[in-house]
Length: 145
Length: 145
DNA sequence: CTTGATTAGATTGTACTCAATTTAATTGAG
DNA sequence: CTCAATTAAATTGAGTACAATCTAATCAAG
Image 1 (cartoon, rainbow over the protein chains, first blue to last red):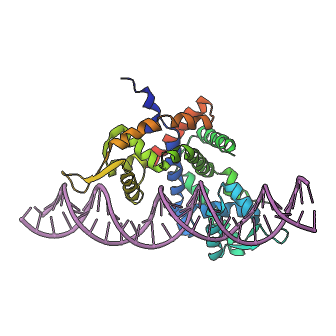
Image 2 (image 1 turned 90 degrees about the vertical axis):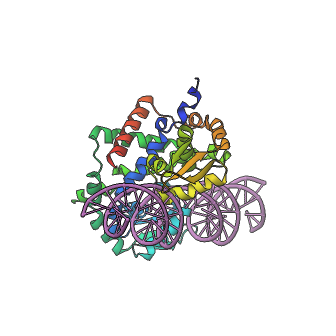
Image 3 (image 1 turned 180 degrees about the horizontal axis):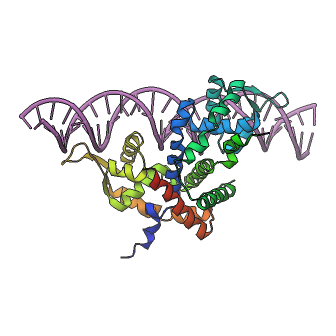
């Protein structure tokens, strides 16, 4: 009865699966708060970067979010349509798309300010576990680039 | 200069963002191996459940994978088209869809057996960190159900 | 037995994710 | 200078995800 060969193929023995499932659960826990602002989670993290920068190239935004133009192009067009950002080409190098927050986009920051607290109220983690999780996740992220 | 209010809105201070980004990176690291078998990651974890069960209802499969019928219906049709599973209604309760592995689906298990090892070779984690990560992720998953 | 509630799955619509390709701008080796 | 290589975005296509709605089967209270 030698099936050691298949042990690693069991869902419960995988590290990737709980990572994948937990990420979806946690992202989903933002939904009630984000839908009030009529934005999705991906739009929210893009705005989060913008609230720190106000002006950024699509390239740099993609680097920070680990997303490519296939995801960002429609997402930024959507944020533009909602009136939160403007899109224009850089004058120095026309390959670059410059994304800039509008006043409306800046104002959204206030409405979003309470979201992290509200969400962290949904997911109760021991502070030590939260710190470990943070560190390990960034270890993974730093390896794959 | 009181902007403590916005501290939690910084990408670097979020726990959700690295979780979301790392999950995508790790899922993606399966791609080279899965594309050889012509399956996606979601199809792979569905098959992983099937390799442990051979016959299961779509409902139970969805519970295990944390996926609903909107995702599973097209996915199972696709696996059926590839010849790895069959789909039929339960005779006892026709609301249930019974998914069953075909011989071809069972054979795929052998080809997939090396994947976990190959992928874990890509992501080097301290064993203690891997164990902690596993435990913390399941803590999150168990909270949100 | 009957009908209202519940349940499983399918469907629809929106949005994301990523591989692969295309287009246009810039760079750099010779 | 010039043209081949590189780079940033956009586009295309396949496959998720998930909310919301719909259909059909089963259950359960009266």
